[in-house]
Every structure is written in C-alpha cells, then in structure tokens.
Image (cartoon, rainbow, N blue to C red; front, top):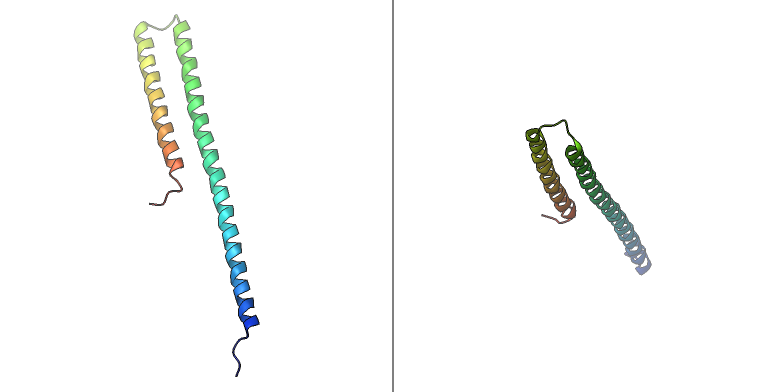
Amino acid sequence: MGGPSEREHMAKMSKIREKMIKTEREINDSFTKFEKMKLEALKRNEEMKESVNKDLDKIERDLVKSEDLASESKQRLRTEIATLKNEVSQKYTSLKGRISEAIVPK
C-alpha cells in the first residue's frame, strides 16, 4: 500500500512555497501602503505647521500696521500669537514622533 510518491510531496511543497510567496507579496504591499500613509501624514503635519505659522505671521504684521488698537490690546494679541506658535510647535513635534514611531512594535 503505497504512500505518497516523491512527486506528490514535491507538488505539496510547491503549493506551500507559492502560498508563502503570495503572503510575502501581500505583506510587502501592505508595508508599501503604510509607508506611503506615513509620508502623507508627515507631509500634512508639515503643511499644518507652515500654514498656521504663515497665518500668525500675517496677523503679527497686521498688528504692527494697526493704528486702531490700543497698545495693551496689541500686547495681549502678541501673547496669544506666541502661545499659538508654541502650541503648533508642540503638536507638530508630538505628531511627527507618533508618525515616525508608528511601525515600531511595543
């Protein structure tokens, strides 16, 4: 009563190899998609920082030109601008760190 032949074993191993290669290809595709998502997130984070800083710089320039605002009001606005710049810098750094560490297992 014959068992499986060498050819049958080789065919089974070939199917296993094909399955392994297919899975590897799917994992590599997933990794590529993930890397693209990370790059897009980093890009959006950078754009957010630049946009906020640009808008705040414009407000600062407008404050300098403004003759209608009292000096106390200008000072409060400058303080708020500095606070927002600090906040965007913190958020930028935090998000950049989270994005960069997204692939590292815990």
